[in-house]
Image (cartoon, rainbow, N blue to C red; front, side, top):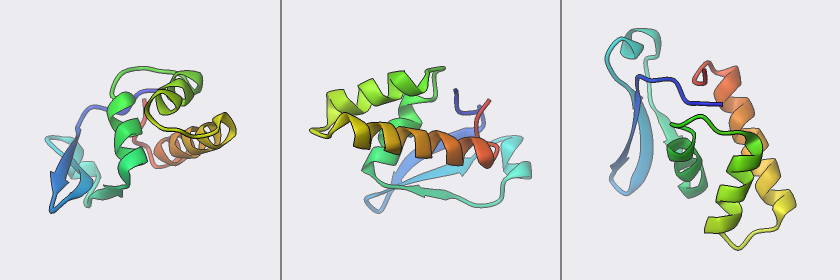
Length: 87
């Protein structure tokens, strides 16, 4: 999975937000608020990676059980895909 081009992640007032840019701003009118884990995964998936890669990235960054990391990555990927943000 890979995040589509046309979105940028920025810190605004201490919060991580994703906004559309360029042609994507004509398709998506809004912004996406992400928590710390979501921001890490968003940045990670700007390159093409598998769910397994994402789980490994979370395990390397956080002291978390693999089952929880897997659930979080699978949920992130599901939401991003269902909302048309992934290629």
